[in-house]
Amino acid sequence: MTAVTHDLVVIGGGPGGYVAAIRAAQLGLNVACVEKEAPLGGTCLRVGCIPSKALLESSERYAEAKHALAVHGVKVGGVELDLPVMLARKDEVVKTLTKGIDGLFRKNKVTRYTGHGQIAGPGKVQVGDTEISAKHILIATGSKSAMLPGVELDGDRIGTSTEALAYPAVPKHLVVIGAGYIGLELGSVWRRLGAQVTVLEFLPRILPGMDAELAEEALKIFKKQGLEFRLGCKVKSARVVNGDCVVECDGSGPVTCDRVLLAVGRVPNTERLGLETVGIQLDAKGRIPVGDHFETSAKGIYAIGDVIRGPMLAHKAEEEGVACVEHIVTGYGHVDYNGIPGVCYTEPEIAAVGKTEEDLKSAGVDYRKGSFPFLANGRARSLGQTEGRVKILADAKTDRVLGVHIIGPRAGDLIAEAAAAMAFGASSEDIARCCHAHPTLAETLKEAALAVDKRALHI
Ligand code: NAI
Image 1 (cartoon, rainbow, N blue to C red):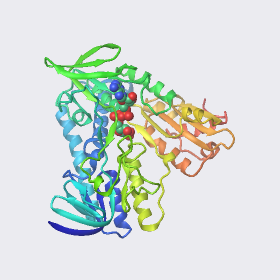
Image 2: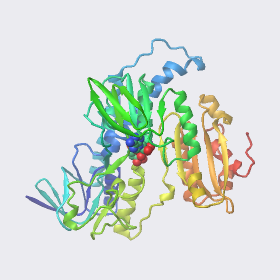
Image 3: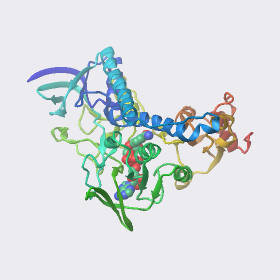
Image 4: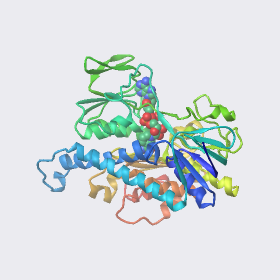
């Protein structure tokens, strides 16, 4: 048994954990980070956000070369898919980024321990035969795919997003269970590469939690792209029968296909964490309860990211990690949960920050709405990407921006302006009076802000 001492030990090397470790080291703490996988970066870098974005980008280039260049006067013949190269490129992107975190740890003198970290009583974390003593322990162990009773995962034909990032060949027919972020992003990838894709969704709509009007518009666009949807379809079972995958739903006939992607949400990773040794009890959803400054019921033990309440997003975990360690060291640290953007990286992208119209209606808030279509934006026209709109919701009395919702080209980048404006308490008039370069996609935000006061200039 080796005994070591640090000021802070972070369990989990994903975006929440590794960022917290770096920030704590910047603030002068002697920091350890425990991660069981060899590469740092967690689900996001290894089998989540980054590899999916690499495949989304590559598949979009393929689809564009095949179907969308002729209109630009670019003739291409013999466009072929080289799937092994596409997958290898994705792996290379992941490798470079995960190695980058090793470099950041070295630069900031964060000590890395490889293995499963387990709390072994107050101020103690066990990793293999090393016992780490630390005044502060931060749990950042993330989440894993939620299971569905009756869906028999075999790690191959019936799998989760991890398998769907590495299918060795394009499926003939892929059934996706769940029309959330993962289902729509990875469903889009394999549709572009030539698969028939059927999305089975329990609710009568897609993208739960997103603004309903935009989700409706997205559904129409995805259908035009050839994705098939069965809404209001509760999946009961999925299994391999005589070499085919058979998916059964309540109220509609079974679907036969050659691969199934289960994407019905994620659940916190809390197994074998030793929580019982410090008396931490999970809430009804299996999450670790924390107070305002991320401290659990056990003194000196904190938790952030997907293991606690709130959206399961990498950037939310990062913000929490920074706020948590800043509070430990300086006594100050804060996350503005209303300012956390959400982005679905389909084509077009869908992005949002703040309240939806549904939120405002149910809270009885009086609001004004300004909307502007990409169709009327010069840059979008030049790009040939005119689908979608920007919608700004502002308080009817004060004009303060309460929510911004975008479906359209580069929505994920455009939402940053809205998030920054909201962080500074901007009114729609403030956004409308900021000079936006012409011709840019960002002009749609200015125009939507003008539209709140019914004075959009280009529509
Ligand atoms: P999700 O919660 O976004 O969507 C799951 C969908 O499955 C829901 O629409 C739900 O109604 C449906 N569903 C549940 N049970 C069902 C059943 N029996 N039959 C049919 N449909 C059913 O979850 P998803 O897409 O798995 O993503 C997991 C997490 O990862 C989310 O919290 C998401 O925020 C995060 N994520 C974020 C991404 C991004 O920021 N771009 C990308 C991928 C994931």
